[in-house]
Length: 181
Image 1 (cartoon, one colour):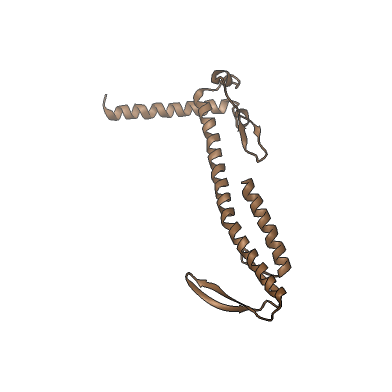
Image 2 (cartoon, rainbow, N blue to C red):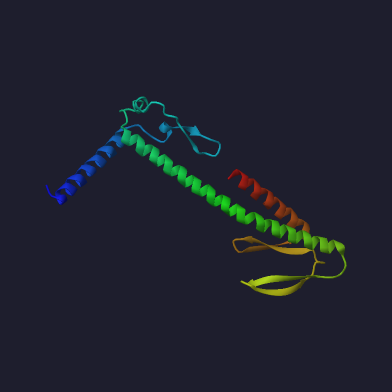
């Protein structure tokens, strides 16, 4: 038999096996719930420990084949990997967000302290215009007002005390969310 005939026969048998597995899956009562033991507090499925695969396969009607069980657990594994990736991304976002919140909070506290000192002087600072390009400005701290960028093209004006309260609560929430992730 030639190589192309072997390839054709092999492709046909793979296709037949795939169709047989799809038919078995359609006729079986196997589901995500049947291969897990509920969910934990975060909604992550808790995987059942399978001591005897034959006995476990026989709990389904009709009994599940090894291929079908492997496919079901492969799907579950894919969901776990997707969840892990999502948590890693969340964790990374919080690790970037927290230092920015802390920096903003420290700046507002500095402005508040400068206002409380009431020496009549403004605060001279440098601010970023672009990468490695800075401008210098004198900030009038006597008004006690700061503008905070909230995101989504929203900037709001706060008193120093309101800004400190808001940033402190955001910092606390972000740290808690990082811990949860």
